[in-house]
Image (cartoon, rainbow, N blue to C red; front, side):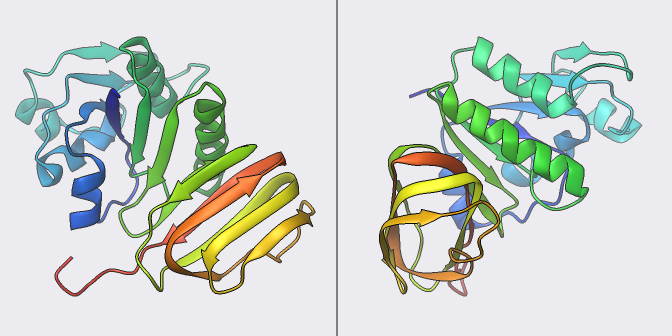
Length: 213
């Protein structure tokens, strides 16, 4: 598996869990996302974007990192450009770090992009460190969460045949319509298993951290 972490410009809380999730990953920074590199102990192999928000201090600190500069007026976000670069380098797993919170339109767009990444056969995690999002497509997946973590499943299209196990309120072969709040604010008992026969959406989790995290 070839893992890449894409550094985005949103908020990021560095935790032991996040460090484990990106261990051994190669890194690409998207514009101001480079500000997270030092806290994560990373030196990205590539820095992409229009550089309208990175700042001169970062430019000096990471002057040795190769850059690909794009016009401000372009048809893709800096994050999407970074993801494309990771895919071109053989990524099979992509972690979008700094991708939750901030502007609602960018967050919604990024969740859609995570689904697109998953449809391409690649594993994807969107994270702020404190909150995580996982794309849900037909099939089965295991979401490794500490007990007592909060988890919500949000349908972007009707869920068909939803199985949900490892939670306080499990479900079996349920139809969950777009707009339903049935699958919000569940509680993980440990690792959570999600099975889906049809539809797509995202699982959003708030991992419960120990005091030393």
